[in-house]
Every structure is written in structure tokens, then in C-alpha cells.
Length: 449
Ligand SMILES: Cc1cc2nc3c(=O)[nH]c(=O)nc-3n(C[C@H](O)[C@H](O)[C@H](O)COP(=O)(O)OP(=O)(O)OC[C@H]3O[C@@H](n4cnc5c(N)ncnc54)[C@H](O)[C@@H]3O)c2cc1C
Image (cartoon, rainbow, N blue to C red; front, side, top):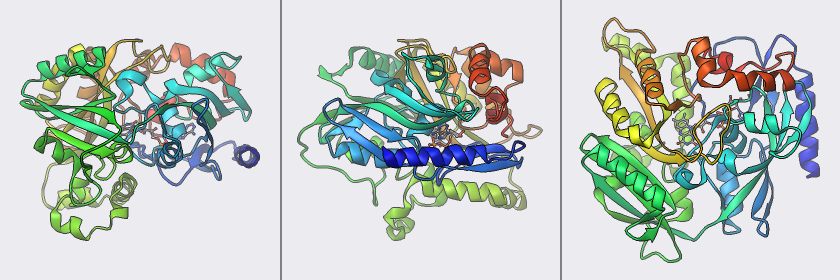
């Protein structure tokens, strides 16, 4: 804790030294954000020494964790005690603070909600430069509740106390195929409500849409023994295995990171799924953060866009989004998405919030499905960037859903504040960042500042 106190003092000073006309920007080694910033005036806020697990307490099943700690480190520390965070986002370099302020999701979310729902305490450097401890039961309750989906616009999480859950060493996976989206959504609803499949308890649920007649739900169950374990960190590719086998076994660590090696399926774009390339690719490069860096470089230098122009190909729109739709409307969303955007595969992950979080107002207790899709789509002639993204934004809200803000958004200002609860946001913003030292949520997430 004394090392942590020193790091807190360091970031507090670094924050105070940022010139008044520059927007603070968290200077950390990795990011999973897909909004690439305009080149406005920003100043790096040193997040040095804020990336450690301070302690894991197996008795209370809690951990004290610094805000910029990656889930990869966090999981390593907790698995040593036979424990894991309630929800572990799939990408190794997502940080605990990033997942709480920017929302995260995984296959335990049908039972345990989103990562912020298992946070007991938040230590926050607020926009006005104070360091405060916010809990659901103290005087900073308003900040605690508004922090999820605030994307660092109210303050930065420096330390979090989170709840942990017991694990078993293995996970048994069952991949169930559906040839119809309605039936798939119905089965997802039944499994999540009963928390059972084939008469057995279920610990993990997610799924993949490969096409209107090919959808899979993957149901996972903890196990103490396994007849064998598969390895998808080398030549074999996890998402392809879903189509090839009904049953599989993974160690718990490999299960938690099953999507990271190939960034779900997005490593395809780099040729990494071709056996020849894969044979020579060092395993340490097969990680989501390596691919994310390549994408950022490509964006910066416009390489793909130039090649497309040179070859006379249509302009491509980046369609990288995660959206939440009530499970009853999930099949409708897939029909719209397949018809209008046509990108496959699509990740499907059920989730249920236990209470109301003002800036991402999902209805408590209601089952939603997160649809995740990440890629480029050719723009029809005469259409401009944002065309498909705008269609998706409209469809999601017509279906009573919500859209995550880690990527591009195209909302008008009034529409945005209606959907993301400006009435709840602004009183908290005024209380903890009265002079607007940090950008506001609209400027940051929609205007890309
Ligand atoms: C292709 C793709 C797929 C994704 N899939 C998933 C998924 O399946 N499951 C999932 O859970 N998430 C997913 N995400 C979203 C991801 O969880 C969010 O983008 C998350 O905010 C990233 O966290 P990070 O730690 O990498 O933060 P960064 O990318 O560094 O920052 C994200 C934002 O949070 C702010 N921030 C970062 N740390 C803190 C802090 N300590 N305190 C306050 N603000 C902070 C930053 O200022 C920034 O605005 C996906 C993202 C992408 C790009």
C-alpha cells in the first residue's frame, strides 16, 4: 500500500502540472479503444506504477488492484489462489479501470453482469484534482454509480477493491448448433434463466453467429478433471473449433484467454490464420495487443486506404462495435445486421445487470445479448463514412438496446444525452469536475477529442 500511496501522489502531481488548455490523456502502454483521437492539444498523464495487484485475500475473496492493472496480470495473481474476477474481459491488456469506466463483458455476464457490478470500492482522482474513495454506501455514492460508462470524463480509477469467485482447474465446453436465430435466442434465454443445460449447472455462456443458418451457443462448466485439454495458442484456432466439434476441454486459464490469441477472428486480416504464416509466427506475437498496435499504425499512415484507392476498390467503413439488445429482439437484430451490413462472424454474449447504472441504463434483471462485430465494410456508392454505423445506431435504439462507446459514434448531441442519461451525468460532472478540466462524454466519445 505504501508503494501505491507514492504512485497516487505521483499521478496527482502530474495532473496538477498539466497546462489548463490541454486535455489530459492517460499515458499507458496499451489501449483497446477504437476511437482514434483528433489531433487536438492533449497532455499525457503519467500512470506510472499503477499497474499492480496490491493484494488478494482468499478469506474475504476480494482483491485490491491498481487501476491500470491488465486483466492478464490480475488473472495470474488470482488464479494462484484458485480465484478469478467475476467477469474477465477477453482481451489480455484490457485494464480493470478501463473495463469499469468503459464497460466490459464476458461469458459469465449472464449471471454476474458487467465488471463494475463486482466492484466494492473505487479510489478516484477526480477532475478537480482530489483523490477520493467512492462506495455505494458513502457520500460519493453518486460518483460510484456514474463511473461505469464515464470513460475517464469524471476522473481516473487508481485503486479498486473487487470481489472474486472460486474456480476449478478445467472448463468443459459444449458447442450447440442452431440453424435458426429465433431458436438460438430462445435456447439462450432458457439456459440463462434456468442456469442449466441438459440438466447440469452452467458457469459460462456465449455464442457465435456464422450466418443465418449457422449459429452456435457455447456452454461452459467448471470441472475438477479433464480427459484431455486443447491448445488454441499455437496452430489451432479457437473460433474455428466451434464449428468442428461438439465437446472440448480447456484449462481455466486457456478458457479465459480463448479469444485473445486470434483477437476473436480479427487476426484473419493479418494473414495469421494461414498455416504457413502461423508456423513461423512466434507465439508471443499472437496476442490482441500486437494486432491492435498494427491497426493503429495502419490508421496513422493510411496504408490500407491507399492500397484500396490504388486498386480502385470501394472506400471501406470501419464497423467495430459492441451493442446490447434484449434477447427477445436478438433475432430481429441479426436479421437487420446480416441484411444491411453482412459482416460475419458476430460474437453473441448474454448479460444481465443486477441494478441500474445511470450512464448505461440497462433494465435490471432483464436479459440482453451483446453482439460484437469488428471489421471493415465497403461503402455503397454515394454513401459516406458513418453510413453503416448510423444504421446500426438507429436499429439498436429501435430495438430498445444500447451501444458501447469504446469505438466510433455518430449521434447528434441531444440524441446522445437522451440515450446516455445527460440528466444523471451533468450533476456528477459539475460536482467532481466543476471547471471541465476533463472532456465531457459527448466530446470524448462522439466528437473524438
Ligand atoms: C475489437 C474490440 C473488442 C472488444 N471486445 C470486448 C469484449 O468482448 N469484452 C469486453 O469486456 N470489452 C471489449 N472491448 C471493449 C473494452 O473493454 C473497452 O474498450 C475498455 O474500455 C478498454 O479498456 P482499456 O483498459 O484497454 O482502456 P483504454 O483503451 O486505455 O481506455 C479506454 C477509456 O477508458 C479510460 N480509462 C482507462 N483507464 C481508466 C481508469 N483507470 N480510470 C478511468 N478511466 C480510464 C480512458 O481514458 C479511455 O477513455 C472491446 C474493444 C475492442 C476494440
